[in-house]
Length: 213
Image (cartoon, rainbow, N blue to C red; front, side, top):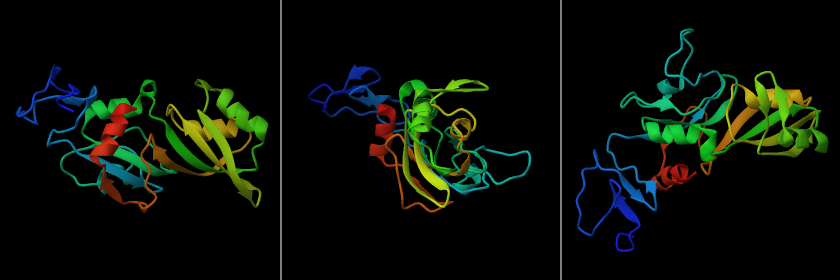
């Protein structure tokens, strides 16, 4: 990759045998940052119910930061409501946090919702064409019904942005209030092995995938 000119250090082509300071140098491969700083950490957490997605809570509720190592200090990327569960990234890499959180970078989030009733084609189409909410229009990138039982249905919803309780408000707006909500993927990142309250480090490949969008 170095011979092919695909690697840069601080914006300049790298050369074989070159040494860099991992704490200071900005290394990119194909224009995508390579996270080599030793002080950067990236956790993938399965947030359980009842835990808030903040670093601290004035009401004294448990926080996601309390579920991962205390040092170095990390912050949640985006948020999940206290009554929702699922995957959440915590990191001290501000660049990656901004990339994952901002809709313009195209890092979609996938949710599995258990809803009242069974959304038909019209309701699912409304989710993707757009619904007017109190804070402006909103829509899902994708929505499909996965199954139904006992007067409820499972709906997969893919979102490109993450306004407060947006998935819940969208589904309620089309007549199907959410009974339970789980985030199952952040961009390409999934992990069905994590139990609520557990975490793991993101791999280098996963971090690069998030940077690529």
